[in-house]
Image (cartoon, rainbow, N blue to C red):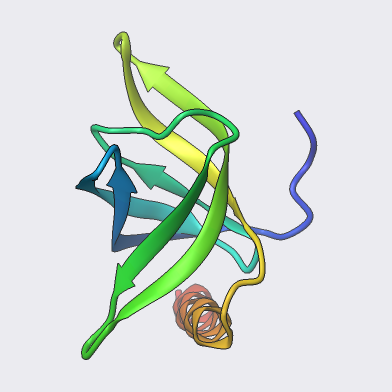
Length: 109
């Protein structure tokens, strides 16, 4: 497995994605400018493309992704790692905001 070029930050954001003509939900457990880990009861196939929808206050932010790995525990697939391609500027701003909050929290203790 190749080493990540960017540090991921722990988070718990809701995400929606299309799975065989139905909407599935997951929780983003860590995030970076280039990718994220999504915990969900439904995982997409390895190497498949997806449009992830991150609910914001007034809209859903669409982010294009490719599934890079799928992990199972207790014989169920429950998390997947996705690589983002051409993430929108709004997404990058969200990641920067999360980094800022984490940085403040680390220096407060």
